[in-house]
Amino acid sequence: MKLSVIVPAYNEVDTMEESIARVRQVKLDQEIIVVDDCSTDGTRELLQQLPDIKLVLHERNMGKGMAIRTALGYVTGDIVIIQDADLEYDPRDFPAMVEPIASGKADVVYGSRFLKSTPKMRLPNYIANRGLAITASILFRTRITDEATCYKAFRADLIKSLNLTCRRFEFCPEVTAKLLRRGVKIMEVPIRYTARTSELGKKIGWWDGIVAFWTLIKYRFMR
Image (cartoon, rainbow, N blue to C red; front, side, top):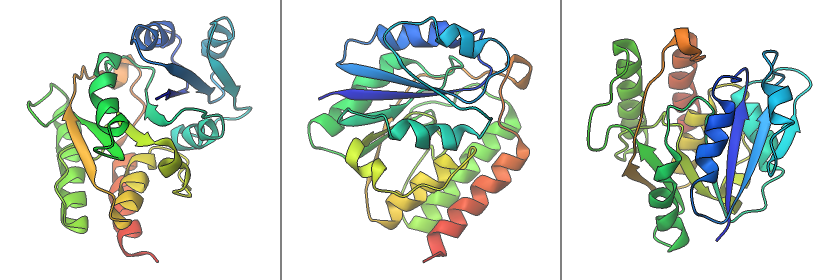
């Protein structure tokens, strides 16, 4: 089965090339779709020099969620996985995430940072991540340990059918809520994770956390 790797990118010139190189090292049949969300730091120019990627350019900054939605229109693979460009997540975990979908054991697989260990991250981030997982578990009567993980893998036709409306970081809670509302079981597998700080370019903030909680609640009860 073919894997489509979606890479939303905004001002990641320091890590972009290494991130793509790590994805390429994974021995899977794959395509890499990068959506540059109107970067201003040289990321766009760097991407235009990289071979063997599908590069899509946003002419204005619209957010991570919108970048993912744009990329879905270019997907030709059977399985879709999201890959941030900041080196927090390790593509060596791709095979463990793809296998359950390829073998028919699951339609969706989340790479959990908390399934077998507690990763090093700032305390507020840890509390927010754990809170989102608990909230999703309670609202949808399921067990999920890492709702906000970047590493989400989907059967391509399934994620394309969700009618996503997200623009920024609310992609994660929206996709989680819509899947669980449909009764789709989310399988989790443990992954590697190396957190980065806001000083190193991490873009998500406290307001995005509030939006994430609201998005879970909204899509649980909205008809």
